[in-house]
Length: 227
Image (cartoon, rainbow, N blue to C red; front, side, top):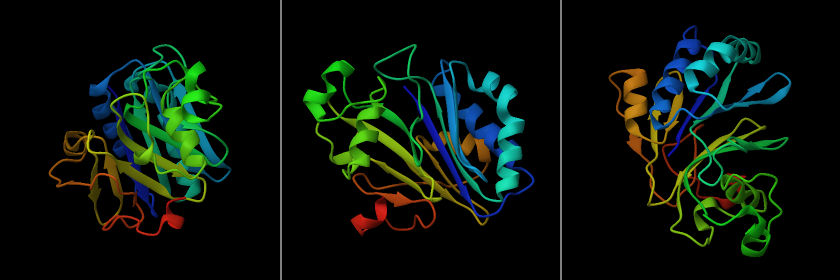
């Protein structure tokens, strides 16, 4: 059980610290074992992951995160609470490399990571099953098209170093977008957005379709664009 959130904005409002804090704290109802975030800075992509609850994590890192975002001048932020479905103590999310970071709510596989090369044709750099989606996405495969050995379920957020935030889900997991005049948001459940942001009306995204938080009114129709 995990919670995922995302914020996309081309302006940094004075309340960004409070917004990040409320979203992360409300998402931790999904679990308090681990917390991780990725966001863009003037230097590129920054990722912080710790085996702790969101409130403890934010107490330690929130000021730095918001200072970095203020300097960058835009908000490109994704967050994750809970832990891997296949590894309790190791390899929490996000799963990331130099230019891509991914967080996910769901179950991709229950098999041991030592079997993933045979099952999926990948050499995973993480024992977290989100690594399967990450590695196959990097090879050009849409997350919801992955064929696995279990009843696949997912709500996925991908942050790109080029500034894009891409979201998708399959029919087994929910995913909700909220659009406001200042920012667009994504969360794995609508109650996260409602509790964090007040009297708002998120909408559910369609399963098996990629959406860009830059312009999420319709899904991404050109498959070239979802990278």
